Length: 122
Image (cartoon, rainbow, N blue to C red; front, side, top):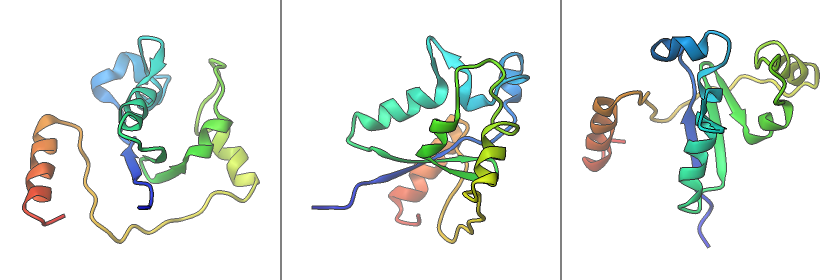
């Protein structure tokens, strides 16, 4: 049986195009309907059997256990609450990425990455 596919989701960025929403809330946590953007993305990939997610937020790579630290409290702020707790528990570490990666914020980025993939260059 093949190893499960690990899905790396790039969650970084300031969210300037969503400024009204991201001034007080990280972009991945902005709701679309009743659920945050990141939930919709993970739900989409789970339809294909993907269950192992790594959330990369800016300079951070998050294990899915990060969700255990988040609450629905309006004052829950990733940088102040959960990251401080994770650091206190000794779970915050540095990771050097040695493989291919690229941001994908726009349709042009997606098309460019698909071209690289289809040409066998990724």
